Each structure stands twice: as C-alpha cells, then as structure tokens.
Length: 247
Image (cartoon, rainbow, N blue to C red):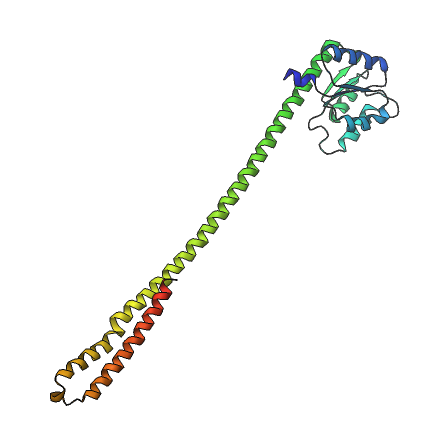
C-alpha cells in the first residue's frame, strides 16, 4: 500500500515558484515519484486533463484563473472528484474562503505559511483515501463483471431449460398420440374384428352341415370371402394405426 501511495500522481498548482519548490522538495524527500507542477493557472485545466492527478495541491489566489475558477471548471465534468482529491494551500485565512473552497470540492484546507509536517500528513491522509476509493472501485468492477457473468450463465441455463421443456412437451404429445392410436387399435381388435371373424367361423361350420342347413356352398363361400375382406381391411387399418403409433 505504501508503494501505491508513493506512485500517486500529484499536481501542484501555484503561481509562486518558491511555494512550488518547497512542495516539490517536500514530496521528493518523502519518496513521491510522480509529481508535476504548473505556475500558469490558465493552462491548469489542460494539465489536469492530461496528467489526471489523484491529488492536487492548489493555491486559491492566482491571477487570471484562481483556484476557485479551477474547481468550478472541474465541477462541470462528470464525477470530477470521484477519485481525485484537492488540498487547498492558501494565504487567505478568512472563514468565507475556507467555506467556499470546501463547498467547491476541496477535500482539505491549509493556510500559508504552512507547516511541512502537517502538509505531509494531510497529503498522506488524502492519498490513503484515494487508495481506498480506488480499491473499492476495483472491487465494484470485479463484482459487476461477476454479476454479468452469472447473469449470462443463468440466461443460458434458462434457455437450456426452455429447450428441454419444449422437447418434453413434444415427447408428451407424441406419447399421447401413440396412446390414442393404441387405444384405437385395441378397440378395433376387440370389436371390429370380432364380427366378421364370427361370421367366417359360423360359415365354415356350415360347410360340415350344408346339406342339412339348406345353405349352398356358394352362399357359404360368399360369407367367408366377405368376412375375409372385412378382416383384411381391418388388419390394414390396424397396420396404419400401428405405423402412426410408432412415429
């Protein structure tokens, strides 16, 4: 964590070169390696957009563009202080300036001439806050990615379940169709076949007593043939139903 703090991007904005030198020396002695300074406040916003500092050490009273103007401009951006922190260092000790600076987005406020030990501690505290927010943001991104991955997985499971449900419904419909065909086959076998078969068996039995029954052999054969044709047609119907049941 300490290494992360030392690598933080720190931008000094002050029109007084002496103040810049003091702050640069302090940061260098404390081991900060990524420090940039600007004395011309008119290009401060440009430098901020390019450098993307995590901490700005900002003077308020500067010609042309003041520290207030810079914070007002930053406030026009989307989430300007989501991670970046602003430490105001100013000779203006009035409560109004402090209140205005803090309400404009400053994270902390120190008056000049400042105590370097206090400046060091304030910088560490603000960078630690940035570090924690960065970690939290990263964790949120990881959680969002996991949620998205889980959502995709659940959608796939849902799609697979829907496919399985459709297949099951098709199979149930096919089974119901088969059962219907089998019921019809069973009914045909038990009812439709019985009548012509009974006639055929009766006619065949008349062959043995045709002389006594008063029925000619031709009549008997007509009954047998007619019954056989009926049975043949019924068998064909049963075959058709069986084929339907096996689809």
